[in-house]
Length: 167
Image (cartoon, rainbow, N blue to C red; front, side):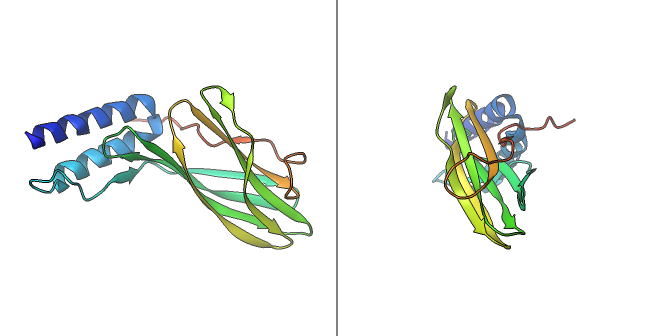
């Protein structure tokens, strides 16, 4: 009975990811493969709780600062919960301070921007964050001059669009 339940959950996860999150289709296939092969007898536990989807590069530049890295969505085994993962680096190459900001919109309701990293002068700092993600979440990233607000910034870059993969 547990194997049939696990198979049903795996199939539902693959269907949900393929229809709701195009970038997460790879994750669903990977999750399905790992679930099928790593179910522990009698417990239903799996070795891999999440699988990473295809990674998408991102970058933004403003003044003497730039930020770049990769982003992807991790899907839980059940395929219900998603996490947006952003990794990269904010680099300054001149004088003054710069900051990296992200703002999210949830179900058409915008949240205020939040600062995730800052660098002053020449140098760099890592950008690493995980954020709960649903199909109705939109996220945008920018680099700003200064560290207090988002008044002098590059254009906001969408970090929740997913390229269509050919098949």
